[in-house]
Length: 384
Image (tube, rainbow, N blue to C red; front, top):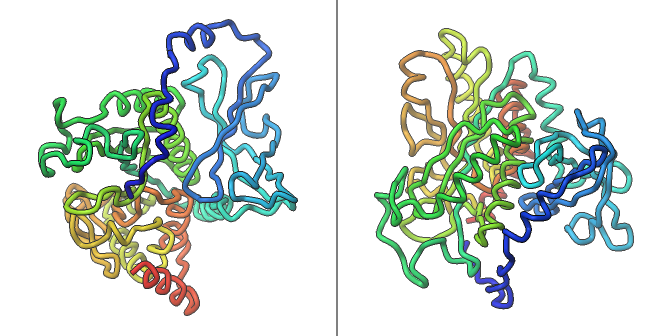
């Protein structure tokens, strides 16, 4: 939702990037690498990062040491026992520091080496290993909204509204494509980093954009989407612009923001895979409420049955139907094989949690217990 920022921060962006460039271009010793450790904080949505120097270029996460941080400042520990561990799990090229410098995606662990509450990756990785022989692929469509520093959508009239939705989706022009510089910078940065970004476009609401990560197999989908979010936040920071992943950033007759998740197994991709797709849809329907419970905070504000969404309390599927919970792309219906699109995840979802539950439901055949059904039903009722 729109939030007003403290005015003390409103005009503090007077730093000259040209001056910074002089120092970024300084030669770097061959035996010194800057490694920025990135992690998910206690909100389960926000990212943090800090940098250390290592003496060699890491080729795998195992080449890097575990580190720690003050978890009492990230809502992940008490001040009396504040150190939280960082475990490197994925390495990416650093588009900000360039050279051999790296960005490191990390898991977080408590003092006793148990995963923190926001560490959804460990369960996701276990599911991906169990389903590895089915080769689960994901393509995640990350929508986001650009905001000015005052919290109002980027490029919108201050305190007012632009023309209604219509000309903005894949739009071209100064009044249609608001913030293209950020979107294009992010695209190139993802390619440089080694993220399998497959496309991007302006979305239905002005100042809203989307990019797609995938296809990625298994745990790589979550690793790459989280790091792509980090890149987006850092790039927008340099432009003095905020990024919102809220699923309904502006109330009223405006589209929300989702993270549509395209999913397939080898059986779905093979000839006549439509049968496996239909089976998967039946399995997803049976656990609808449980999936919704992990598909993102405030998702009820987005899944209303309007603005290209299904109602949060109902499950439906259809070919080329953007008002469905699960869409079968038209070419998949024609070719009788391919993938399905789960349109329910919100833009602020944890991709580890989303890909984990899809694999557990479809590939591993997990079903709800009565307790799980009650818990997920209560989660939806509380939001209402």
